[in-house]
Image (cartoon, rainbow, N blue to C red; front, side, top):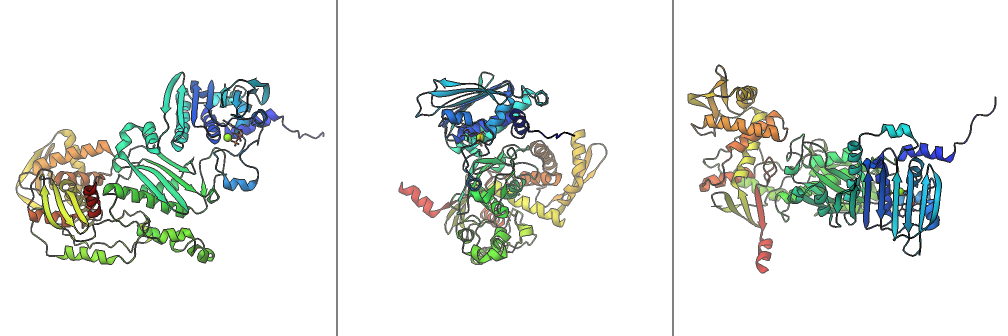
Length: 622
Ligand code: ADP
Ligand code: MG
């Protein structure tokens, strides 16, 4: 038998290798855009015809290539970005494998024009099927233009495998957006079939996000910014009301490289807990910068997974940073607050790294950042003194009032004994630090309250909504909602649809204090209502409740129970334009700060704003 092993010709080898890097037009778009970014371009234009099947062209004003480099660039494993294996751990560029251009040249017809600023003439290269067809000097501006035509023209099986233009275009836009978001300081234009579909002026990250994801976001972004020795986290997260039913506008970038991470996504979701429905998705565009040696990006050219040296720490930081940001938006930028105590109990923090590294770690700056005051994740263990005031305040005799007080006897939790298991996803608790005095109502809608540090402006409706929400949640858990029997049971006639809906809700409503029984076709008898529903309002209360419930159903998909509780809280909350007595205000404020999450409504709106003295003083000194 003769020997049978032969070396593959270069173009075949390149074609096979190209399969790894260039799977579809979008992968070529990504590679070419990243090359332009790596070349230091400040303006990048992307031209697409036929969803990239006919043409993908990227024109940049970056540093260009010399004649020799232009030719070398198409060789496999040809790169200017790393020289040896150690460089892999210092990567600051998007590319480093030296495979993209070789792959593209193996599966498309490529035309390159490039010129360095210091060269008089540029270089033109035409290459197809890995074979150089033409190379000559050309007059060209500084920068590079790479056009790749007829992707997979020589690999029909792959070409047939491409999806519809609409689908391929979606992939292209996804890739484009990832690059455009990570480089707001670069101008981008995208032209598809002769029509400009993106025109992104240079700007700030916030401007870029709004340019891409929509103007309506402008007022719904909360900035995240935490700088620590180990890593920096910055970017924007959406306010709870910007959450969507579909996953979508969620971006993580590690050292400016887009990544997918279910683990870090979980960290962000945890920070939103109780602020958005469990099945809705908050918006985020978050950048994590850390030492290149702390991440392994060398997993696979097209994979977006990433390995962190210590992912628990990154998780904790991400969650703390997002919580910090959300906390600031929901009250004021100056308010003190405590963040997740459980983060301190993370192994990564309380038992830094492995045991044998402990001593080293304890003296490291990372460990110190975790334990330093004013860090988002820092919590003082001995902060009971503040809480004591609150306890005294609440233990003052209960007052009579028109507003129901929760009778569940729950203690003000100090929130400092939670374990990692139960606690990591807990929302933080923030309270003004000492007693509240001199309540006054303004516009029959807001309560003005003096604190030691300044004053609070409390929205009476939102505050009451929060109070009722927590009371109903508790009632659900303990099945202990007080109900009052109606002297004269009220009959309720509903439309067929509403009757079906009410039937579904009967047992839940029962738990919440509504005693309702079916009474023939589409009719019900209301035998009893929660103690805080005024006599005579039973009928409209139920009707409004059904309306509100439907509103929630079409809005965000909460669980039935959650919708019901939110509807009830919304419905029974005192509204604005309602005068309150002093006692009512007292009780409202007292009840509010007994809540586990006093600062926001169930749907995430602030219940009060705090104005600190020094802030007020500054305003006057202007
Ligand atoms: P990598 O980006 O991994 O180095 P590529 O195959 O994408 O590999 O590119 C090979 C080399 O060609 C790069 O290292 C770079 O030196 C050069 N190059 C590619 N695109 C450009 C560009 N738009 N401007 C300047 N140089 C470029
Ligand atoms: Mg590259």
